[in-house]
Image 1 (cartoon, rainbow, N blue to C red):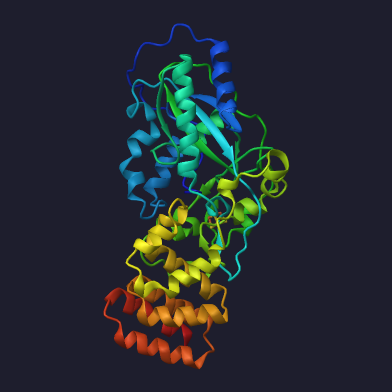
Image 2 (image 1 turned 120 degrees about the vertical axis):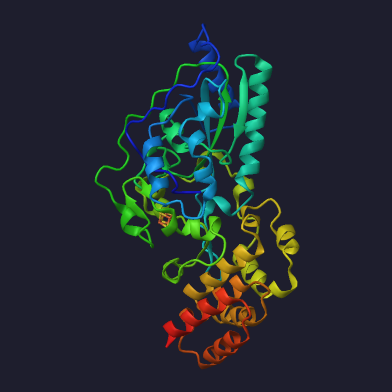
Length: 406
Ligand code: SF4
């Protein structure tokens, strides 16, 4: 997810033994590898040494401070994340690639907003397939021995490695910035069991005195330059976190129903990046697949008939499949509370009484109390829903919503 790394100048792990160094590092071979990456269709490519990246120490401090919230897998993977040689002892270099996506605006019809990267097909699949193509080409050419290939699914401080590989410069919002694409690109990596000379990091300061992302973040989640507290970040709250999120955070989500683009949108590198379509033509796989805003309202309305399978079928191949029906319906409910509408009110009234998920019922109750607090019919519906609520946690959450309303 966006905003899980922080940045540190120095740290090194004890060396882990691996195979003997390649005795013939060759700049021609290095150039050929990068050229193939571009031929396969990646917009950016660079090489980094496979060892502890510069941000490892600050990542550990970030974990120690509990800023990863309920993402326990990050804690479990701590050792290999700070030094990937523990995971890939035969790896020598890391090939890092970038694939740009559209920055076309996606503000949805009924007030929910979805991060741009998630409007089309799941980038894990799209970039992953391309990465496998690259891996096969490298294997076939016999230039290097390619090992594992991955997209945002493996314990790796990928933005830190990518910065070292010259793919961009780190921003105060913990994004990576490219002159042409701003922050609007995905990363992928291939471990190489061949040592190649690393690329040069970009020696250009990205942010200077600019604090646009820090100032604009709706939830004050950027707690220091380059450091995002995930427990405050809308991306975490709407994608990574299961269950109910704190009321204070719900109030500040500004209609975001899946991810958040605010820190990228206000960044001068992000807002001035030329639209991808102007330079490279469209990338249909990342264009909005239909009208997701309407679909989210539909998911909320159809909750009582959906055991999760309909959601999975509806969003097959999309990142919105990931949090499941309960997560997406919860997000839709909260979004409809921060962006109230007549249609949303009706969907929320239905959900608070009939949704099979206590998390969604509680989120709908909160949304009604927050977005429709002056509506007398809403007050009666909330009292009725609370009196019938069988889930203790949902009932407690509803009670707090009602108290806040009065
Ligand atoms: Fe997270 Fe949005 Fe804040 Fe960026 S602007 S740190 S994505 S909440």
